[in-house]
Length: 340
Ligand code: KG4
Ligand code: ZN
Image 1 (cartoon, rainbow, N blue to C red):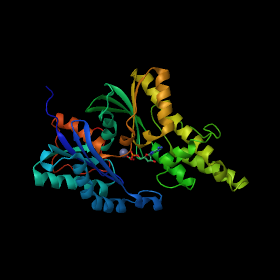
Image 2 (cartoon, rainbow, N blue to C red):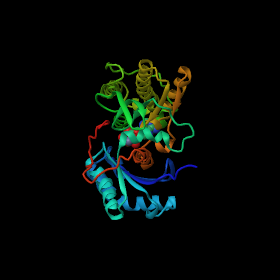
Image 3 (cartoon, rainbow, N blue to C red):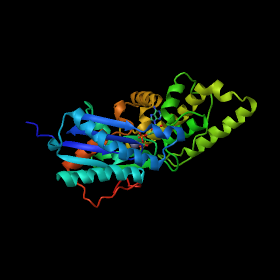
Image 4 (spheres, helix red, strand yellow):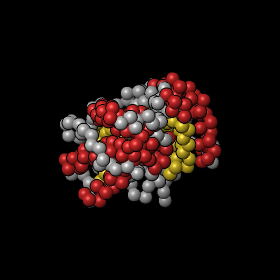
């Protein structure tokens, strides 16, 4: 007979989404994401505004998650929050909320690393979970990492970005093009009718398995300034091709290093994670490359790509099984290391 699975209430508040989820084991009973539109007009996340919005949203978001799951606080076995990395003010809201709830209910809690959460999203409701060891390409707004995942609590960073993250490359390109924030999904959409090979951009020269995206942003800016001198309508006349070409460059850089990681390690089980894994061109090319290379490939469900509390619950579940409970001295940490 299957043992009773723990019910975990988790919150995620590392950046600009307030999210709460209830999981029974790895089954998602609810996953509520309350996004903050306020940052759009500033073209990026304003940390002080993000913390204030989290303060306003956290209680209703948690109540909605409990209601959607049809679960009372008495049915919960443990609590979880994102300890870092992220914005300090934002992390403090989720962390202090969970610590307060823990004091009031005597429930234990688990402090989760946001980047582990992105990877562990693969184990949510999936019929075909990745088998250990696997290589995960985690691409988000703040990170770009190639991780060798040996076990649910054993991670090794093989390489990462030395400057901007892949998500930043999308968002900064969008800003240069005068598009809204966050630009990643907008570029994805516009690129669908563009020619990915129309314009070519520079590829970084960094050591194998590492990434660099800050040069691409400068390259795009200089290219557009040059073209706009000849034709002031260049951006509007070529927006789809520009988006498709920049997106193609980012995806080629990412998948090139993933291929190197698999060659070096001999691992043929591969996964994508993080907000940028919602990108349709990346998903398609990742899947085609996996077919060509005979890799077993894993792409998270769309709703678990960008920040959400269910992924924090998944990571918390594995910590719960290992008895890795938090204490009141576990402080939110904006620069929480991947391996602590
Ligand atoms: O993982 P995430 O939700 O938050 C962080 O932990 O950073 O990732 C957010 C990033 C943003 O840079 C956003 O533009 C990017 O993910 N993103 C996308 C897409 N959806 C989200 N980038 C490209 N194409 C998308 N469809
Ligand atoms: Zn994230």
